[in-house]
Image (cartoon, rainbow, N blue to C red; front, side):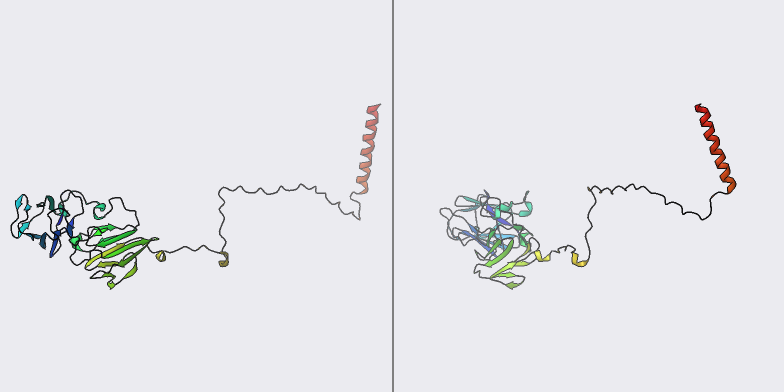
Length: 287
């Protein structure tokens, strides 16, 4: 599918969707050209697949294609330039673009939007599975002033609003003619979750976002009520030394007295004799 845009890339490109889109000064046109001598609805581009035809609705006005005055039912091709009252438009094929169109081109505010973690991924082949990051507040519609501008014939100019509040995504229909649908059901205002299908008229989108907290599994700590005590790590601890053993003097108990003498009479006599000899020897030594 082809697009049309201002040649100076001042505004975002508009999809050339079937059956046709209009161009003029009126804000209801998918492509608004605010210039002198431009009628409220000046041109119509009919589309059938990728076959385009330009129709001038204001006879006598100077409309040119590639420098030549247009004829009735002028065919258009990619890279053609349309001149309308001094404003130049061009037909482009997104597949031929050397670099991807920046995210800011679909937004009114050229500054980088605040990241919310939410996005819409187009399911429609006409949008090429494009991903639209969401800001805290987003307007969706056919108007070029919307944050997400979609040039679909049956889409309202301000179709719906998407809001991210405390990390939760909500959608609100803005009284659109053909409705807003969540998972196939029409809604006026509803919470949107990751994986839902969000549809504006016939344009369907998959919702990309953070996981719901209820989907998380929490690990419960083992308590004392289950009879289990957590082991304490020993790393980094110094073992407490054992108290030294007390030295005790062990006194042998005296042997029980015997009823009979330990030595015989002969042994006693020998012991007395030896004692006498030692005494005499000591006495002689001293003398």
